[in-house]
Image (cartoon, rainbow, N blue to C red; front, side, top):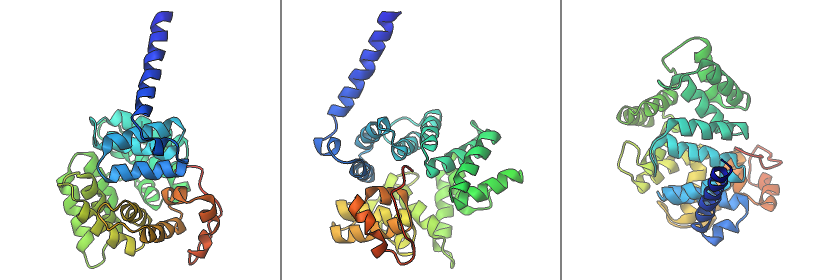
Length: 287
C-alpha cells in the first residue's frame, strides 16, 4: 500500500515537472499578472494546449482566473475532450477563490444543464455572483426563484443553447441580437468569442476582432480587454502596444478583473488619470 502511494506521488510530481519544463522561461519567470496575460494570449491564438499548461501552472498557484479558464476549456472541449463534471470542479475551485465569472457559470450550469441540475447549488452560486454585482446572475436568480424554465434574457438563452450543444441555434440568436435596431453589445461580444474559439462556426480571428472592436467601442469591458490582447500580440489586429495599453486602461476603468490584474502597481496607482468617473484603489485579489 505504501509503495503504491509513493509511486502515485512520484508520478504526480513527475507530471508536474514535465508540464513545467514544457513552458517557456519567459512565462515561468514573469509576475503573476503577466503570466495570466500570456496564457490568455495563447488561448486567443488557439494554442489551447499551451494555454492549458499555463493555466494549470497558475491554478497550482491558487489563481481563480486560471481555474475558471480551465473550466471553459473542459466545458467547451477546446484542445481536449469535453468533460462537464471536470469543468464544474474547476469552476467551483475558482468560485471559492472569489471568481464572480465562475460563480455565474456554476449557477447557470446547475440551473439548466440537463445532467447536472441542482437548484440549491444554483441558488447559492447565483446569489454569490449577484451580490458581487453580476446583473445577469441577478436575472437568473429571479427566474430560479419564480420557477421559470425559459430564460427571459437573450444572452442567458444563448448560454443555455451552447450548454445543450445547440451552437447553430445560439449563433442564429446572437446574429439576431447583434443586428437589431437596438443592438445588444453583449451579444456582439459573445459572438466574437465564438468566432475566436471556433465554436459552432469556422474559427475566424479577423471576424472575431471586428466584432470585439464593435463591442469595445460600445463600452463592453471584456471586449476592450480582448482588443488589448489582440493589439499587443498582433493577432487579429495590427500590432500596436500604444493602442493595446489604451484599451487595457478602458477595460480596467470598468473594473474588469483580468484588465486590473494585467496592470503593474505603478500603472494601477495612476489609473484614475485614465478613468472619466470611477476611481480604482486596488487590484482585486482574484476573479
